[in-house]
Length: 266
View 1: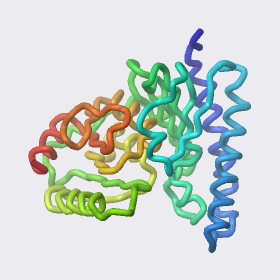
View 2: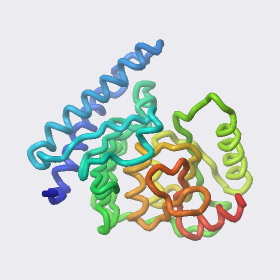
View 3: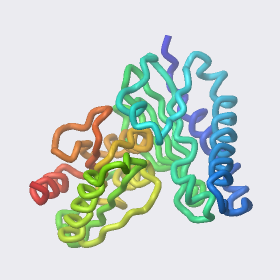
């Protein structure tokens, strides 16, 4: 039997562990070797998942957990076979966290029958918690989100992202380079901010006008995808088709802005 979604319990669990990391922010030594980096990233995962599992177990005793592995592209091509599970990006922007830089969040998604039905992204530094329930809208704290209604590309903020793609060929690198060039030539402001999910939530909040990425990054996207969608954004692949789990690229913006972008890139 599927659990009803007790929103306050989920939000409180995510906020709680996010604030644990906030209290320890900039207290670590910035890693100087790969071993030191991997150890700190592992510790972040352990602390985050342990706290979330403990706080959500009583309310969701039968919901399984899948730890999102952003380094394993194959695991991101389709949802788990489980009917219902949690997908946690323990810290989106963990590199920023260990480097003492802003731009890190705690992301959690409830997946049912292969699609996200509830997601939350907590930014402890800003004390902003973005969340969405399928069919019920998207919110920042208690405020409903609304996407940008800009029509002039010259005042739009577009962001591009990239993940841990296969570097054995330069084909994808060239594609990403072409995308960035097209953005720079056509949009007023172009940035690469860092935490994928938060950037997608910012599309939902009207802070970012367009998000585009050319390589697969499902586990980093999925929490933000639901938030942006529930706020009114179109969720597409970069060929203009509706995005589906396993697609190797992502385009998110208002309908009018995606139409302009696709016209530019034809």
